[in-house]
Image (cartoon, rainbow, N blue to C red; front, side, top):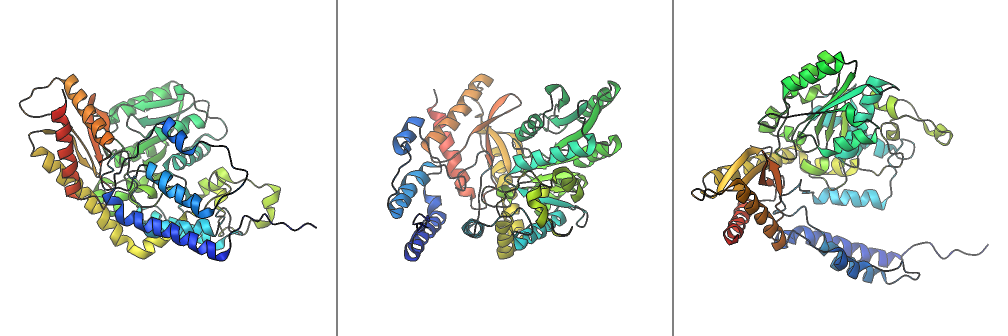
Length: 476
């Protein structure tokens, strides 16, 4: 038989040098990112001019390819870990988890079933147990699964809720969420085949929490019309304002009405590790399912979401399939096959980065980092309130603060204020010195800071506010 020379391999020395260059670049990035501009900008035409080409038939020197990527790709991507990246939800990861991801990818570990990777499955069981304890879920009966992010965790939760509460027929099922619920929930509902008429978006009150009376009225009306309320989605830490819904009260409603209680805690749930966050999270342990995003406030690299459930059997009963090609690797009931707990069959080894970072730094370090973030946002709120130029539109809540430029004595119209604050955001982003964008609260354009990066300092924020004021004064 003809010898195969196409093995997609590099020799050992080249592999080592290649790896050292990658690690050197990552370490250098971690130690110099504060000095770089956080925002990357580029049009499609500009990106095409850099990268557009036919797939090459012949290969080129591996070092040249790597140098090109480091010079052109990494420098043209916005740095969500930068101390002045305040928008959306920043991604302040940690180096230990980055290296754990490198190990998991380098060894190419399949984390779907026990037979293929018993250690990987065991670490997922252990780390899920850690999270169950943190959030007050039953540790023996409870369970969970790591996902690509909050979107997939929410989809997995709602798929489970539909099967448990509705069985095969969900034609009359109704689901409830607030107007501040994350868009991933609406996506999940659509993916599951629910019609628009089966979705109830409940208005929020002045604090952006569920309007409880309107929710109760809506549930009662649906029952009188012969419909079947089956699921309610609450939020522990909205993206817009960091608001936490009235979890204990919503839990009581769900228990009384026999409705599945899902909490989307993708943004804020991790704040339970801090003392202030723990107070806000009262009632989170009463959820039937809870979404958490370790790649947000547990400081993990993308992608890492998590779904926790009160009863692990709900997951296995929803997702287990037994094709012939898997019949020899089922194992016993204690040896969990995570492909039976979620949508994916082939899964990367996500648990490793969470495991290694918690083992390396300890929960205390994570608690301190989260507490710092919450305190920083409150300190920023005090700074804004002491200024003649700024108005706090919504107070610091779980490290999110919403504010707008509205100098005392100017008496700008609402339309003018909206235009000025939009201008500030656009100029700050185009300067590339900070990532600070707007949202809409109470029909006003406001600036929103999300301060979950433990490496962001008070001076970083003050410098950014000074930059904002300079751009505001230039507005005409």
